[in-house]
View 1 (tube, helix red, strand yellow):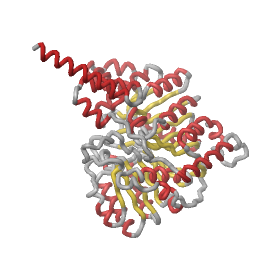
View 2 (view 1 turned 90 degrees about the vertical axis):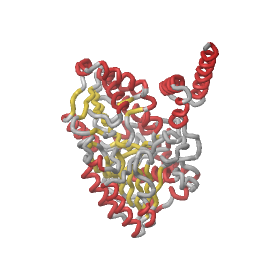
View 3 (view 1 turned 135 degrees about the vertical axis):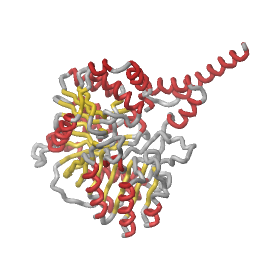
View 4 (view 1 turned 45 degrees about the vertical axis):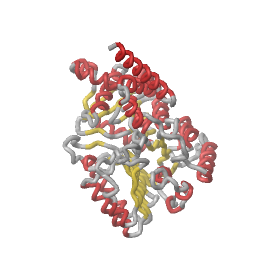
Length: 489
């Protein structure tokens, strides 16, 4: 018995030592460090298997990076724009004033990720799935040159098959059709589903990994983008994926509330560049020289619009230590003078975002956050409730949306600037997912987004300390326990 106890203690000691060495080999957020230590220490052997698939960082490489002359062109454009910042007094575009007032945010993206300003954009907003898909399918049917789709979820259901049939028809007509999908986000969809498109001359690939490859250690890094670019003229970005549930056809979720914007203008160039970088990062096409595709003029046609919206297309992902979208969120929160309106399905902020919200609230800024009133992921939902309670104590108004599932990922500040894209207010979007958001400097759009927010508030229930105190101890325990797993969710 003594020998067994000794062997057990040795195993525990070795396991703990290896856990410390394993976790500290890579730089990561302190909360994530402690969370992984708990997993590795309290789940010997099994914990290391979990870490192998979900805890390892993406190897640093040239994956998804601009190189050569393409990078030089972007840098030159940004340097020219920096010289103009603050000198738009005579500009005919009224949004240049907002850009001038937001120079800190603009330069943050320029300096951290070579993100230029895109002017002269017309923007249309979609919050209902039936309206969004109707317009998307119409644009796909009218395509003349190219169709590039990239979605975290592309289900092989009714709407998925309908869109696939349009893509097949366009590919047969000689249109350049490319599709990127996330294998894990598109459960039930595989290459066989896309075979008719491939046979017609189109192409479709999973991003980075295949869910059937059990030894693929990149499974935790998900392509969370929701992008569509047609002829380089029209682009979509936001929260909608391709699936019946986004049309409210799933009883589990009921009505689906989301936000997608359709862009016609220079901002489409930013979406196109994001797609083509990701295209070169797929397993099958990773050997392609990014410059061969990114600089192809047919993807960046000249266009004329009457729009005045100015925007930056901002990406972030595990290939970089710079969490650009998170920094953008924090900067927006810091800039707020009057109001911050947020919609997010997952409210699991790290300490930096949490503190920014607290400071803004104490500074007199009216902060309203809308979250779902139903779970799609149990632990994530309970963790969201935990942070909703924390923020409520600091004067932030947190609402639970009651008319279906809230999936929008939006932020509006002072009725002047808004962010719309794929990034949630959680650890996964900040550190692990490949995300893309449009930060838009346009008062017209921002006020429209505030109106949408107000309409959603009318269908929501304000979360109060009284409501939280009335909940059961078991529910309280699940919220606190889920919060411990926040950096891993």
